[in-house]
Figure 1 (tube, helix red, strand yellow):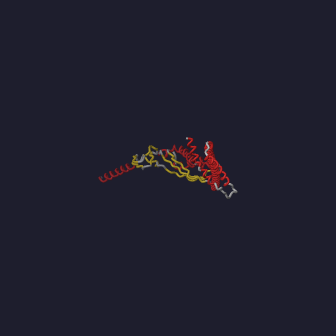
Figure 2 (cartoon, rainbow, N blue to C red):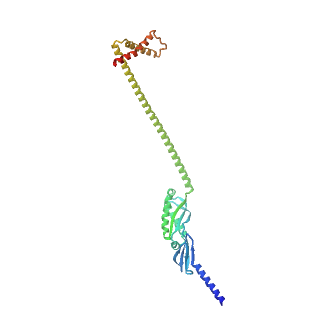
Figure 3 (cartoon, one colour):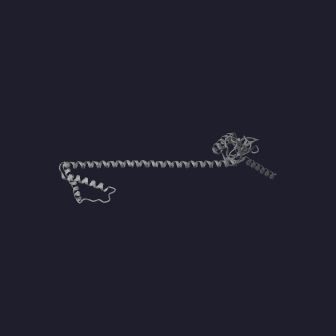
Length: 307
């Protein structure tokens, strides 16, 4: 009898231990569990230690609350200008409400996959081929706006949608390559013509500046020459006045200077003749040089009178 009571106590303790174990639920980080009682949702179990009522309560769905990546398989799309392209992409989403994700939609991942597939066809099918290749950011933004709005009732937040590859047909790729080559050749020809034009302009500007500088130099030289002639004329006029004054005063040196000057000028003209090779000087040429010596004396005399 004592043995039977002892065994009963062991059975009761085992049942209690089992109930305790069944009432405890440990939820890992990044996960949330939905709790159902008699098949009806009552609450959500968050990460950590949770207690439930054994037998009456059970875990319904185990939801991943971290941001997830869903690959969109490649598919063919007909654009607005009837071009066939192959497109694939990826979608990043996160479950924000575990209850809605578990009970508002069946097969969440499949629903998101089908939703993004149909919207890719709708958005990209309404655009031309050139727009598909040049406006990828705009395509991503439109898809994100539409899909995020559609998945909001499911407790899901779509973070990003990225179109990975857009593959046109082979013949279109070859045509685009030929077009790009033509455009590059056109730009090269334009740049070469522009370079030739700039070179011609620079050469013309250089010639213009050279002509201007030469004209400026000629004008400066003419001005200097005129100034020199003016000064020589003033000097000759001054000398003439001095000689005239000395002659008027009866100075014989002034007369000799005047005669010597005329003599020297005549000799200079004779020596500068092109057909003249030999010049004979008269024996009294030294007297002419002596007459020139009177210039300094004449100058001193006139200077003394002026003082």
